Image (cartoon, rainbow, N blue to C red; front, side):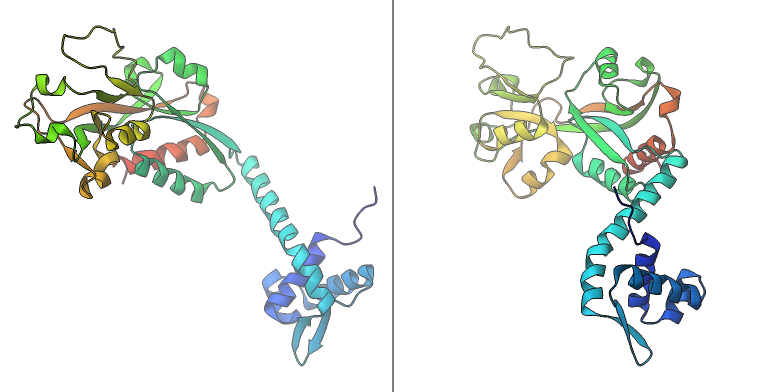
Length: 298
């Protein structure tokens, strides 16, 4: 395979001269002498056998051929600079990829703001996100081999963990659901006449036993699926308050007035992988972004 006849440096010089409009200004930007800029461009044009620049007064402009070639070279220059930037990150210990396991009830708006903030700091690090059901055991979490977990697992059961927040669950139904036509407060007997829609929780397995007069409950693996089922009137359910906020405000869903407590809480924790070499600056930055979104960092 033949080696390239031109260098990336020559194309960068051409790009800079075009952007700055003169050899002199390009030399200032590149921190080089004007003669070295001129030499690089002469060599580029000689090796290609084409005239790429022309001087009009004191301004250097591309020829038609120069414009066509620089248009093709520009993404290659950007890709190469990004490659060097990534190499510098690897030298400094920046990870190219990390994995995050998140309980499905963790507020999505907080999660994606944290990921966006992390992305601005480490644009070359790819994040692999996996959503899980509530109540996975220590063993099940370890099988996933993630760098960071957001889970209902209390930190005393993990190697390294920290409380994040309590997720408030509120009872809701479609705004024209028959439950909303009953006298309030609603009793357990009132609720038992309709299916309970819930997000799967392995801490509360379904035993299959139901009191007489009750109907079968429905279980979903994601908050989104449970909310859609409630929104079409399949049943009522307890869902994260932040997740249903917009639907409550626009009237699609309504809160149920119960005789018992009307808010239930589920605590979420951030758990680190226990392999010390994994706890590097990349994982640390992601954890800090998540903590900040939970109001635990300034």
